[in-house]
Length: 235
Image 1: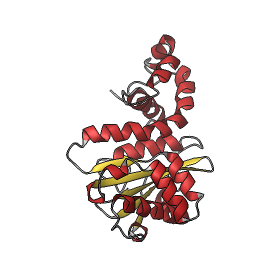
Image 2: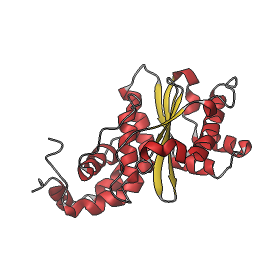
Image 3: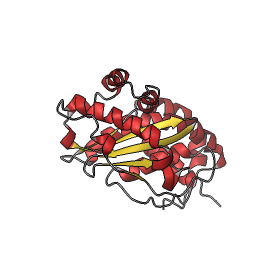
């Protein structure tokens, strides 16, 4: 069913326009969805992409990182480290979206990158180290006894995934990977069979989610004509 319906060319514009916006609103949406989906279980978090980008500009300066943690990690301070399952930290660097997953139960750092793929942990080593320091600071804000350097010393792996086939779909691949790894961190990602179908489902599931604060803005863009063409079967 899911693979039998494709959006028409008419809605490609809509999917592209909202693609980058989705990466930013996804954090708030997913945290609310995960809270309902994993009731009574350890929590999943996804931070605002601005956090990761700004951390990389701090060059390891602890005072600056502490200020960022105070501003961007407020939701983490509502719990304690042993009640956290995973924290996803998306990053956009030089126009490319990728993500670092900090898995608490596995004490492991997983790098998600649809261009670097199997070598992501090595090629992003410097950036991951800076983000790991920031996560240590964040967890110390939750628990003052948390030693700085704990997460920094965790083993690092790369999520095995098919390399993206273009130069502009990295954000979509990242979001898909985050959604599929929220329940359990995978070693290998199933291939994305039809990227346009995946884009359309992200639009339907995420941008139109009741948890999306900008939902009304999305609805105003989707005219009846767009919806009509959006549901046309592909031939």
